[in-house]
Image (cartoon, rainbow, N blue to C red; front, side, top):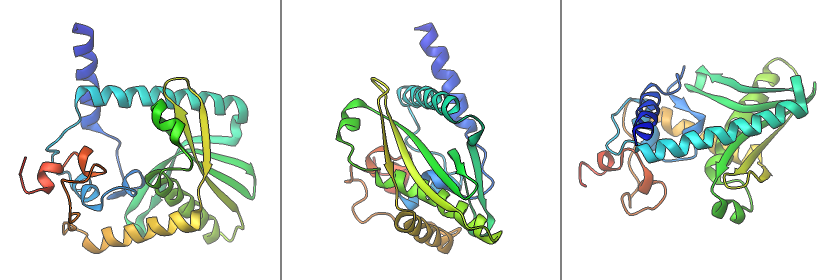
Length: 225
């Protein structure tokens, strides 16, 4: 029990620090609720903070992600980079690409890694919408940056899922025009509201996703438990 307590305290401390962000809006949150994204961006204290159990799940997910990084490093060597920053000051947007693979000078693949429980893994038929939005947002900006430099580059976006139980892999391509376009629409909404809080879902509090696991559920519902 002493070891568990120490691990929980260390994870909680790490969660408070978080990953530094240059911009207000983050690619990792674009596929979820814009109101929750606003709370996060403005530093509103969570009314439902992560539990030690949830933090341990995240830590396990990171370990699975490291397993995938090692595999890709061995396969592609210097052709792949990890934790590649994306910064778009014009949209107040930033994020980190899990993996950026250069197949050829004019062919780039943007990769997003996700670990998932076995039951959910077996049901996967395509990338989940929130993950498709995230990876496509990064790929869209990668394409834009190359276009600004006058370079014609083919950009792909893929989500790679890892089964937490047996480390099986599944990969799904994502349509950048479709999901990157959605990401741009979400960003326009977020920037439209800016310092004003966006409206909540009409049925907030009754939704299993994303309301059921939201860190600001009580805050969003006006303090009602």
